[in-house]
Length: 520
Image (tube, rainbow, N blue to C red; front, side, top):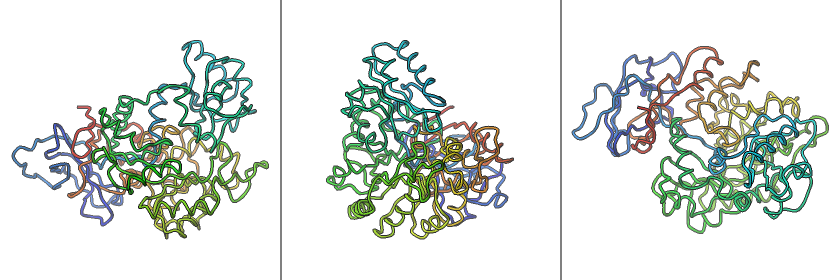
């Protein structure tokens, strides 16, 4: 298969490592992939060797001499790429989802109640935690009263698929110390209550062993790093997990407004190693949720939603947003601003410009071309979760029918010079970078035509946006590697490319030169 010539581009490039038995890794024989180089240019039709020593790539070339004592791994003409990153994960919630009642795809209050009734009968005497329903297009909205009628004294918490509201019965409302009501708990009130969920549901699968299990699943997808934006991060959480053996991938730990003081008091700046952790766990950004979501019709927009739905709302005043960005910047922290509606994106960019803060717009789901250009001028990255466009396509057509062409405007962002990085927002979408790439390339998950294909990425661009700003394997880079069984730059139509990406299998993954996954 064609190999990309690493010397043919001046764009940032990345190289990953290969490890079998320890930190010293030998030559890897197989095609090298460079997603930055334009298709059809700079092809090489022969394998290369990659020499990795002490967790870094030392040399890439043909028929490299193998130093004494360095093991050799034969890639057998597989494809070598930099390790993949998921730039937006709620890792604790993703870890718990495997034990929750799956409500994905439910289409009515009645269907959810039926699934809850069956779970209550199947698993007696334990709380029921559900995940995945999206009620925005249901013919009517859920009530606490009808949930109480089937659940009795059993606590039940049903979290929406976008994570922005929860349908909770009265027993669980009391357990979460929330006021009585007959509707859902949404937005800021839910985010503040979420860390208390363990008081109702117990540990719910968040032990270090559970974390290690979920990290191994990510490594099996070729993932070498995650940005963990879980709501209730504490300074002691990751040292405790590492001490119990849950150390496998690179983790950037985000903080929220309610928890950031603890990290600042410890003197941590973005990129610093967390106290009590090894080099894989570092300080990430301050996460700020500036508006809501499309599903709850709380994403803040410049124009009203269809059918008199209002414009959504900001979660913070302009003054508070600017204060937080300035506060983070003065303490050496990057910022990740959740902004889904175009008014929220515009306000966030204004705050970035005024404070000089560095960081990302998370989601950037609806935006104007002017704001795309402003983002490029300010050097703010777009952290986008392409699989959301598959979930939100029908909602968008209903709520924002006059602005669908400005949703997930990935092509605009790249054309304007914005650095685009991809993620999942797991558990909102699965922690699967190949699914995210496929969604960005072929903007459809069913038999319908791609949704606004003019905003799609090429398969090269999607892969480049998944490698943490690096491109191909190159000397001097960390030995974080993924060895693939299939060509990650498939040919054909966008639908065929998406199908190929979703069928990707990974032979091996290395992090810092150490083996994190092997299918050999």
